[in-house]
Image 1 (cartoon, helix red, strand yellow):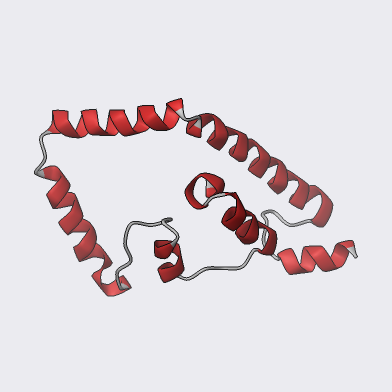
Image 2 (cartoon, helix red, strand yellow; image 1 turned 180 degrees about the vertical axis):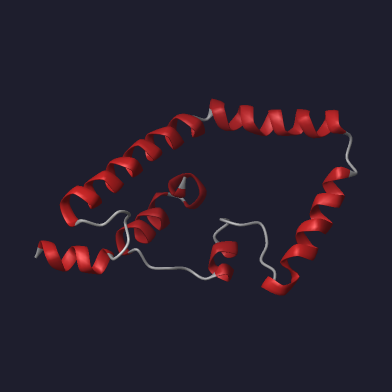
Length: 114
């Protein structure tokens, strides 16, 4: 999904460095639609849900179908499945090689391989 959302260069930078990004950076990169303070999250979420709920259900369904179909035609879902397969292989390798149940402690894993 990173490649699709960010483009290959930014996706590689994020994945190769494992640097964390801020909410503002995620918003600027298009990973999230908007950022709100945590204490306003519930209110903002409910306002958005209420706005969407005012739309006609058929129009919403057709809009969602159109967007999803376009993504499918462009190969998004096949690409996403491939990424999930690779991701799961990574978790299995992290556990069997490094004893890590998930891909955390990347710095420690890197040091143990040197």
